[in-house]
Image (cartoon, rainbow, N blue to C red; front, side, top):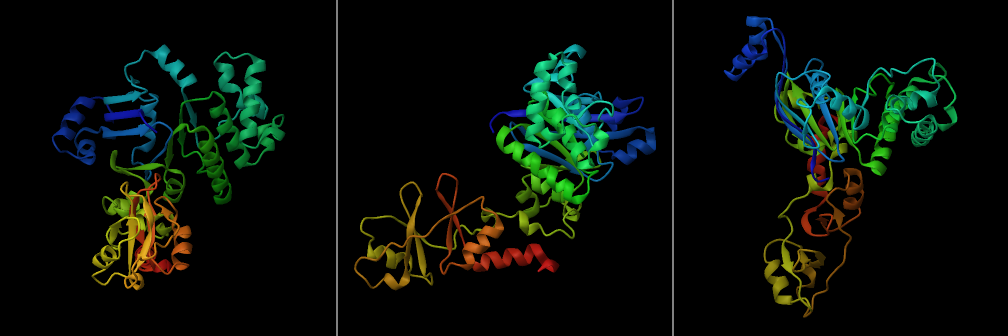
Length: 392
């Protein structure tokens, strides 16, 4: 994940006869309700800016009417913006000529909607190949490509069936296959799974996550369901009244909700499931000492001169080498004990299992092995109590 795939800058959309007047009012501090009351114009999106990184699933979340569907239609320019910019791979979508926009939509952008929008008289294979047909790809090639994608989404045995012969979940897989067949670099999914029952919905989320692990596409996913957003989102943007009120990883949003509106999304949800070792750790709970050969008894004594029972030993690059105990202070050459580290991204359930089985605090490390903190039973209990509340 390096360069941004999509950059949205100061994007606004006013539905009405005099958007300029509405934009001036907004700039002067008027609310969307003031604008409607005084001018009858509707503010769909107001002053939205964010970036979507290459290869991430970026979820747009909000209640009905918060502006998320308008926002994605501005991004693929099904709706013309009143102000602001949308850059995809550095090109301003709002400024490209119509013909180029059509090519961009056919080649680089695919959309998957809540309604599967399949053509009932065409087979599953023909539906999956439709985007390629529109793009002028020969029949043999488009059917080969569509078949490959149907295999990826588990529908190859149903290639010759008609949509009506499939369940809702399978129909949605056909919609996903059709979007993937054109091999887009950006996929826009608008409430794509919300018409499915909870089990089918989870199944489709799993299909998407499996594909994402292999293909690393950039996906803009619109949802009103926090659990879905937490499950699939690399980052989440929460919208209210046409504005983006918070952007962050699921953990950042759980740990530091921007306001009561964001907090209200978590009501009744056990958010602890989405926490990682990085959310649980403390950075200064265990004393640290520099690695030496052999371990210096006086350094151990100096490091443990408070009430600490353990010290972690790090090398010059802050890589974890082991730990020393208070009961070794009397010996001339204290023993370096080894313990397996926990990665910062390890999910809560795995952390709990490890912490419960360990007498000592456990070291938490970054992907490159450098030390970043520690977790112990008390940390875990505190965080669980705070997040689970009535769920405990």
